[in-house]
Length: 264
Image 1 (cartoon, rainbow, N blue to C red):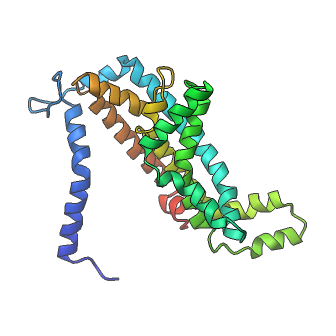
Image 2: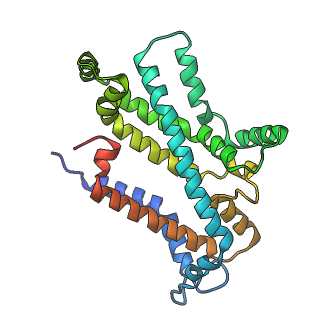
Image 3: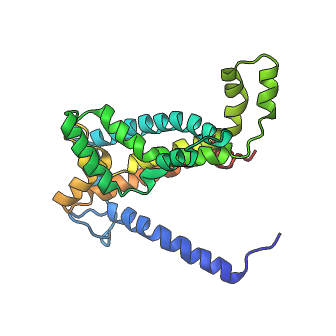
């Protein structure tokens, strides 16, 4: 196996440092004890981490974003699996148009989607509903789930499934026992990507969110617009730490290679 040369290592080090630098700055700012955004040149403080518990709006927005991400990612994957299998297995008129329709949210600016959904919800009078907000997120995140499931389903050998059907297994049993385990890396990876996109979505959500359905990104945006304190930086640091812990646990318990690429 060829080892990376010195130039390659230097390039990768600079690239990783460039990617991580904004996160490092956010983490450092979150430990300041001052009432405004400043690097902690006079010592570290946990003042703004303690303030998170008193920020009721941000805490409530976090839980709403969590449930919203779980709901929209799950619905997106449930829709993406049969859609991907149909697109991969069958050749029919309009197949390309249907695939392009499913992927179209990737090509439409989220600002346009936000304005369109706002107008639509205002017309039918359903603004402020968690269910409708979840459906808007399903529209946005489904292409991400569909692309990963498509990648897993493309070229899938159907011999084992056909053998199960010939031995008397129902189609649902064959899907659950054979097809699903084979495409599981794409399903899990698509769910994770859809959840991340839903949890992090701001541009579209800011148009359709109401005081009763304010997500964490929208609440953080409002916090930044109204104040200059480092509370948002401390919330971001907690989210960064939580993401790292989640990835480590997932790697230890299941293995990221197995989940995302199907190794092992």
